[in-house]
Image (cartoon, rainbow, N blue to C red):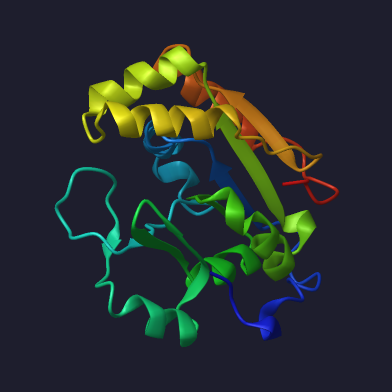
Length: 208
């Protein structure tokens, strides 16, 4: 899913401080845990600078997983057409979106961290501008991914193997990409993740 062409000129230099950080990685790699840990570590003192907005998902409230904004599947297309979303995509029979107000937060100078599909990376660069976007690619060894997928109990064996096959082909490269290896303990992963958030500003578009 993509947004309208009228938004594809970026920030036009309106913000030199704001940053949109796109967190990508295969299922089971631990993105939600890293996001929760980073949010907790940053705390109230950094709340004015760092923002972790909730995603819109066509999944009922109260289900297992992240704290999201629940949307009805029938409402999603019309909301996308009306410009309610900055980025949107479909995965695992669900629709996902990042709310439009995220762009306003970047313009104000905030660092906004969101979990997205790698399919929207180029859209984000077109909408926000390459200097104001960073990609954090989270990865882990195959056996670690298998253990995590089995532990969370959402998929059967067939689905797990299918996700692992996709993960083995998962690759995002480029000078705007920071890789975070997340197959150690959680505290180590969070530390690496926070270091990636404050890494030097990117200078060109990644190859996806």
